[in-house]
Length: 282
Image (cartoon, rainbow, N blue to C red; front, side):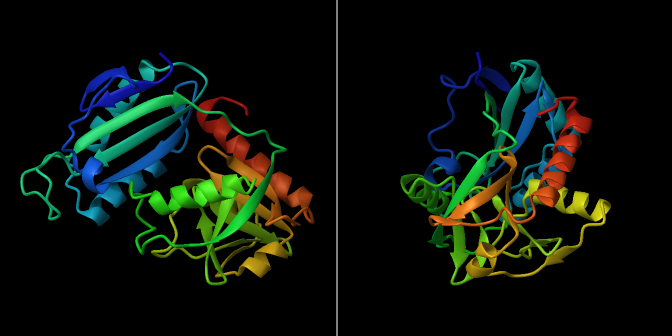
């Protein structure tokens, strides 16, 4: 089996496993999740992802009481049953199963859903493009919930336009992509949008910032516009399954490509970090 599922301690074939129909993630998307890159059964930045998962539970008041050490043990059980190679580890915590009612159920026990599946990783020289779309998501984008329909719409529109990803913006302000962070290089500095309720705190973003600070690359945290992004020296698209790829087109207009040396250094630093933690070179 290439796709291994997990539900509350049971491990099996992802395509045949079942969850309760009355789980609140089915009716309301009442769940949080995280996704982690795994190379030869070694997860990358697991601690940072679990920090975010437990933070998402707290922000949504999902009473997930499983101790972190127990969750790590269950993750390792799942990974032991999973194939080698590049995988995505998906973890979802739901509020639990209960009769359909909008208010939180009093006695529901959270359910833990996980799976691993092979994931294709982009080459280092992948050339990404963006399609700009007004950001119509709700006001809780800092919480990694399963309420992703606006992201789905944006990703589909970008795909239909022949682009790699959606460039989301609220008015002129750039927020992020449908399922990636957007950073830029300008005049030798890494420029990142500030984290607030409109932006997910991306793990790849956080690692990239830390690496730039470690190598004495200035980091500016500020709001920037679509036009500023188009004028950037380089544009970085960051996510768990993309790592770091560079953007060379927005809405059919050529962008980036003005500081390839610094861009490549940042990408190399990131991939070296992946190697240090997993022992696998990408």
